[in-house]
Length: 130
Image (cartoon, helix red, strand yellow):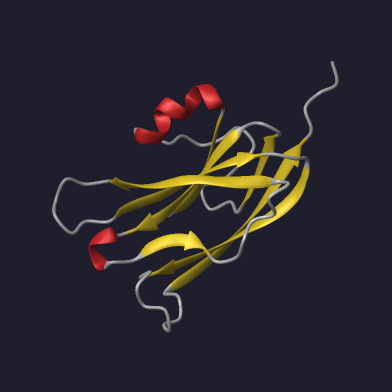
């Protein structure tokens, strides 16, 4: 299962706990998220770190539009070897539309093709004029 999670900066506490669906993302298999300048959002992808694989950026981000903050692995079960989710945290910096390209790899295997790939479209709305 793939899902997108959007949170505000005040919701960062939930990043290390629970990840809920954003208001603009729609279905759980959505690959598009709408956010605003200054907001933080999370892309959550199925993963199993016991295999050595993890989700990482496949291409550099447009640094004027978004920045990668960090990633965290969230276990979904307490049993050893069970799958979980990689949670990738980003911050929207400038208005516009970007694509985030991700790959599921063992980072030490430089010559291997990714086991999986994903592309997410992020629509970043400007802040309302005050």
